Each structure stands twice: as C-alpha cells, then as structure tokens.
Amino acid sequence: MGDILTVKLDESTQASKQARTNFGKKNDVSIGVPEAFGHSVDKLSGSIDGNRNFNGNATSQQQNSLRGAITVAVYKVLPNGVLAIRGEKWLTLNQGDEYMRVTGLVRAEDIERDNSVSSQRIANARISYAGRGALSDANSAGWLTRFFNHPLFPI
Image (cartoon, rainbow, N blue to C red):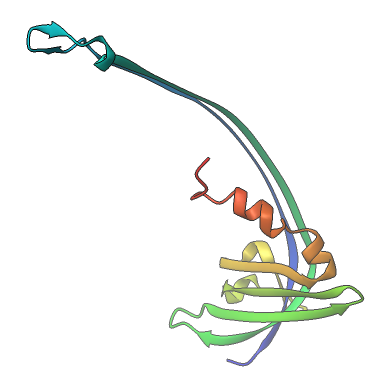
C-alpha cells in the first residue's frame, strides 16, 4: 500500500448509432343524429377526426482518443495480490482546468520494470478526462437547447 505507479494511457474508442422511428395514429368518432320526441335533431350530430404522424431519424457518431501518463497510488492490496489503484491529475491552463482520474485493479505481473503499467492492463478501469472553464463551456449545449431536448418536453 502506498506504492506509486505510472499508468501509460493508450485508449481509443469509436462508436456509432443510428435509429429510425415511424408511427402514426388515426382516430374517428361520429355521433349520429339523435331523436327527441320522435323528431331528428340534426344540430346535435357531429364527427371528430384526429390524425397524428411521427417520423424521426437520428445518427450519432463518437470517436475518442486519450494518450499520456498519470501517476497513481496503490490504496489496497487484495488477498490474491491484485493492487487497487487510484489517482488524479489537475492541469490549469489559460482557458480553464482539466482533470484526469484513473481507478482500477492491476496484477503485479503486469507492472513493467520501470514501474509503469499500460491502461489496457487495468481491470475494472474507470478513466475520466474532463474540464471546466471557457473552453469546456463553449463545447456544451446551452440551457435553451437542453430545455428543448429534455425527455419531458411535450413535443
């Protein structure tokens, strides 16, 4: 416990998703001509028609790559010798802050001679990379866009 390791980050992901939705519904209600005292009352008859159609298409693509290194600490040694690691790194840049966080499990035999381990050898890895500040804010949807895209928005 307390040992320090360097995690060599070499991660890349690529994902794409496509969806198409089509549905429609039609309602017809008719009220026949009622009779009152043996006479037809035409003014009380009527009909209602309703028609609703929806066609939607969506495509999403995402590609990410993370390369670099982060130093982490061993915070627990499991009974089988596996090391539980965690660490984070904060970078303050001109336009904001960025942070990287890594947690996971490492086998002792996966540690290189230079006391490093590849991120691809970490079990149950959780690797976070995010930022805050002007650049991060500019890359996020505004409040009005988030409002209209919310699942509870009626349209």
